[in-house]
Image 1 (cartoon, protein in one colour):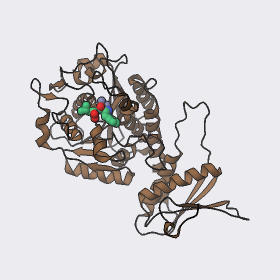
Image 2 (cartoon, helix red, strand yellow):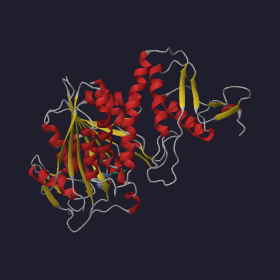
Image 3 (cartoon, helix red, strand yellow):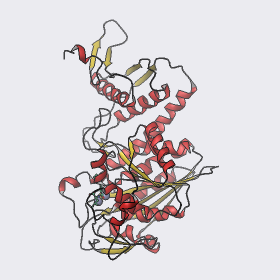
Image 4 (tube, helix red, strand yellow):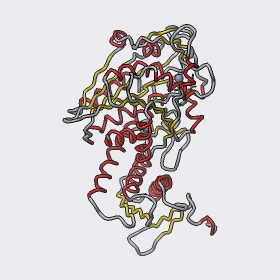
Length: 448
Ligand code: BES
Ligand code: ZN
Ligand code: ZN
């Protein structure tokens, strides 16, 4: 295609030159726009990966010209992780496997010196990418394979393959004894048994404790408040929070953080049946609060309620939950940005900062007390859906807050948008699971 003069260097423009009599076969020029930034570096990696596959190239040199805007470390981190991400494919159920070819990539950044530090960055990228790919695989697996039991087995496997990670699995009977009735109500209509998963990583020395909770609905049909078919298509992704927790735990030991980390998943499948929970039913959660379940499709908050009560009892310094909780979060921020809400301004600030470093987009929404009355029930302490049809992400956050221990620093991240790409977000992520959250959580743990 002929490139117009005013198009030169524009994002998305590319030109391939074939060289003669040189060890270098092809030169690919990619437009980076006005300046180098994380987004166009990620885009560049997608373009490089696509062309590498087309040309079947085995050796690639990526040259980034001098720039003053971003530190070299960030450039290397961004390039290395985006290249890994662009290479990811979920081919388990493709009978004609399209394997990714092995390749060597040299990253050359003007003004960068070879230093130990960059090796450390690359090692970190290695582990974070491994954890992220693990999460992507889990989310991409369909719900007829990946059920609550599968998640429990995966957690046990992670614990078995490590020395510092332990796992505790509670079956429905044990959950009943702990009075986790909000959680149990969600799975009662399903043929799949629920499993409550508690992973813990304890380093030799630590002076901080973090709890990470992941929403683990292996399929969300909506229950008796059944979803329309279109909205149900991607609902195997409703355990993306749980997948992020498992992704983190699959690599945490090798990163040796000096923080005690607990991972909690209240895994369940949300299905309609004659035994299913019905609109209007009232349950008593494990902190004794009563909930009127008016919409069985607002199931995530019911499972998280008992998980948050459980997590609070561990008395952590920080508690975090990742959940594909509301369609409203996608309406508010689009598909690529997660919503964060917190009862602690400093914690929110901290997480927003590490998310940026991790290359994951996040924006803060308020836990507005004025909206709390929208959750008042005539017959119980709380209703599970708001009386208003607006601000659904905020009222979901306020609902969760009711189950967080007093004075506990907590943040809720609604990942309903960025967990799963129904269209490619950029050339460097294909359609399907993104593994959102693994990178941010690992960055947070390593910074603590
Ligand atoms: N799992 C969904 C939220 C969701 C929507 C995740 C789109 C990913 C993409 C959640 O359980 C749900 O159904 N939420 C309802 C809540 C409503 C009934 C108050 C929603 O957002 O419509
Ligand atoms: Zn739902
Ligand atoms: Zn759900």
